[in-house]
Image (cartoon, rainbow, N blue to C red; front, side, top):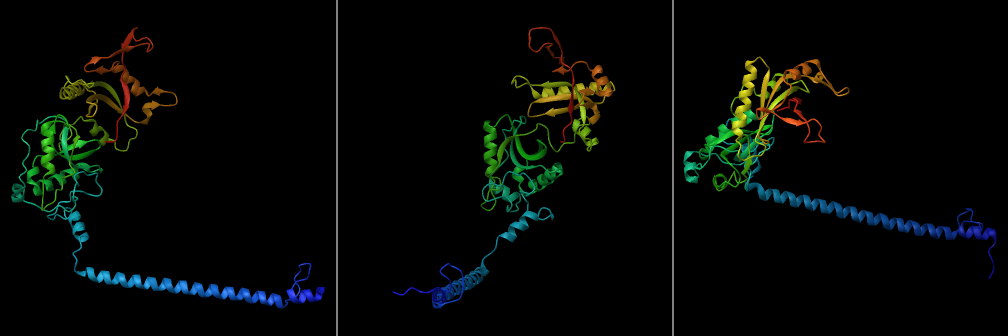
Length: 366
């Protein structure tokens, strides 16, 4: 068989034997035709896929329109729920049991935003009456709703007014303080296992309107012993914070504390009264005295004076002259009315003792 010359090779394959591109021969043209054929096939396939996608979208749109036409006669619930949630703000007949901005309990089964208005007749039909075994004391109550906004007290008071109007069977609901907010609660009990507490919880959950139980999510929770709707006493330390809302930090000197220390035999009500009495005594002597009740720890403290950030230098660990002068006036801290003696040497508890000193504390943002 005759071998191709370089010129014949290049004419046929389009390249020289060395691989350099020269001219386009018949074989090169055949190769190009094959490439063009495959490109044409790919374009045809792409066109078919696009057509199928467009057809599917059109069918989906037609189906959606048909379904929308079928639902024209169906009653929509969303507008009704929105109307129910805003009716209380407009002064209407609907009570919004849960404000989206609140930390609220009581949604329960069926939700609470759609609760229907009621009247005394509906309350009578429900057959639920306030429990008669409420002890009238204790720190546990049935929680209906909580409010944590800056104006939580006002919100809770307004909520309670509307609650009593629409749910007369909850006429024993009151506003109480809880943490840094307010709560709507029912009853006062010694503990969550109290039979009276469980009976009241069951009664509240059973409140029903038109087949719905708006308070099915009610629960027992610890609250403050004082009524949250009551006006603060003049020397409550929260009034001190209110006088200086923008002073941060705001310090005061703690000079006494009364606490049950978890002892069941001690009454926290007596501790609260002792703290307030000692505060009044200091006030009578001309001191700027304040009291604060910590319900969770069952501890009440008494403080004197108020100081800003200059009261203590963290770099030098020194107190300001004003604080040092106050510490000299109150050399020992009282615990349940008496000086508490602590070891001079902590490593030797049985050694010599000294009165516990008063300490500077920060007034929290209530």
